[in-house]
Length: 486
Image (cartoon, rainbow, N blue to C red; front, side, top):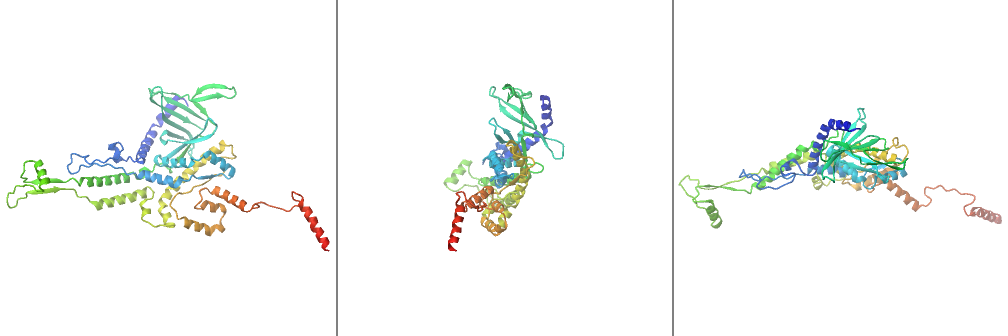
């Protein structure tokens, strides 16, 4: 791709990038507990008892943001990926090699991918080979990526445009880096720090001619051997829509009701005294008499006179506000497909009842898992290609996902015990509530069997002669004894 083609691509995708970034930024604001109600305070939750000075009765302008979005997103991430999915390609040795490449951070990467997908509608993972020849992978911020798909029915990914900021150490200014990746190569471009409209090649790739044995200088093109675009999308759902906008209105409504309630509680402490026919000369004298003598002087005009002190206060509709808060909270967890933590505090549920509490969250997590499964398969196949394992594209890949939730382990263990004699060891290991890695459990069971019975699993036959030649001698002795007896 030359510079003119890159400029045309940037122009054609500018509206798409802007819409995506606006939506993603809003999701991230709410995820960081900076709801719309705090925009006046630059995203900070602030208590202001005298924020409205023009209204003597209602001066409070408290703006507290309620962090419902982060709770719902983190619930799914914890429920689905606290334990990383176990990958099985049909060979124990290959499984171990793949697991070694995935590394210990795979669970954290999966969790971050769920969070990114919930906030952006799609998360992105990039893989590469480092200078030491190791397979590496990492998460790319969703707002940096513009995918390019072909027009076939399977929407094959043919290119990825990645744009991000870098700091120019000489000028102290930021410039924009544009990377364009295809199934064969990646090209690097940048804008000038002093003029963002000028785009030029970014020579950051060090080239070395292996055949000639010398450096050929730096360039802006990197050729890779993956055979596919080294970026993997992790969609959240069919239309790659973020979660927030399904319940954003409910969060805003809850913030509005909650802060209105808080403002009323603050303002109710403000009492305005209305004086009729006060006999003093100024308010300072009134306050001094009230404080020192607990008495106030008034002028009385006779019968029908209304001299005295009246109070102006605020009445708070407590029950109405509480009912609205409860209804909004309930709808939030329904629309957000989450679990209200308060339900676990007020229930003694066990077994099937606990599963019913998770039913909404399970539906959401199952949808996410179905889309993530294909993406993880793509990552595993890229690792298999790197490791030169056989048939990476055609081999069946099985993934085992484990949910993290409050469970009645006793009930589950009793069920396993009842079906143990009619199920395979693998099925029992997969469903065992105290087992995190079922493959390791099967290996441990095999070791235990070998320890208790050293001949377990081996076929032994009686030869005419053992390794020490004792068998034949023993047979001769036995025959001799028989002859003596005769």
